[in-house]
Length: 441
Image (cartoon, rainbow, N blue to C red):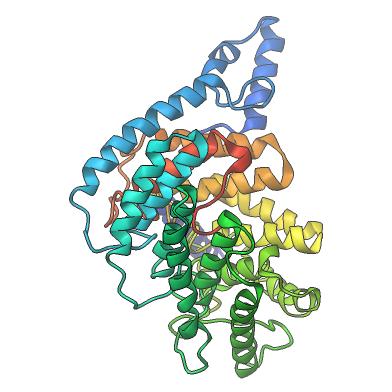
């Protein structure tokens, strides 16, 4: 028995040390613990505690709103990081037009800064960068994150804000022409978010949201949605899973679970109200499929990277709880069943424990992307605990570059690097309107 026990202990400690290798131990007290400690200290001394006096450093004021001091600190850091980013971009790949790691991602950041500050100079920077992207399109992919769909959609929106209707319409027309390859029955395009149909669907929904419902006609959206649904039904039948998971998808022969390449990202797009999926389809195809993913949850509350993978390792937006959480919150909105919100809250606990990532501060597999999960939970519940946690992950990003994280290949980009952290910081201080870029709508 002793031998078995030590083997099992080795397994447990092995996996724990691996978790630690992937993330830093969270140094922040949780909100309840902090408040409990302060009440106790005040009770013992009868006077406000030192901890309470240090409340000036806390992100939330007594009313649970973002404090002025924290807001100033974040705004100052955004200025500093923007300067560093602009300097760094001078040596970036001039041909990378993508939203994920290229010029469109930077344009999207400036569009966000324009949204939160209304400073015209930010809109001008967005135009400069999107023009650079539009000169480099290669016709290889169609998606918002990694294909021509991103620059064309962002170009249409930036020109729309600048009242350049001709240029905006030109971008829209080209965006809509991309549907041919998406709808073609002999196309080998996948369905996931980064390179597939869901990523093209996002581009259409994004321009509809930003420009107006007339920007893209409903039949186009309906055709793309149908193509995604048919593809999922076909694979499910092939794999003999039609009963358990009516919509099944794979990428490079692997059935991924997460937001970037997997089921969670595809279901999340199909659950969007603007995708206008019929109530019957939502109930008969999407709900059981979402439940199928729910049942793949590890005991920790995290999710596997693919259906064939049983290791509980990754806590990223791209793979793991931080991406699945968004699908669960959307399922709660659509189906009004509390179990989805409970599971999302469980994802939140995993992210609080294991979400300060050694991989860096970015959106795809970094602390900023994980922080957005707390902002989404805050929107869904209005619980200040999640706003507090989002602020603490922002606080971590305020010390950008000091933790010894891995330096990403594209260190200034939106999804891998500094631009993503800036986007997150700008959303944390105006949390009501926050939105994970190129994903949430």
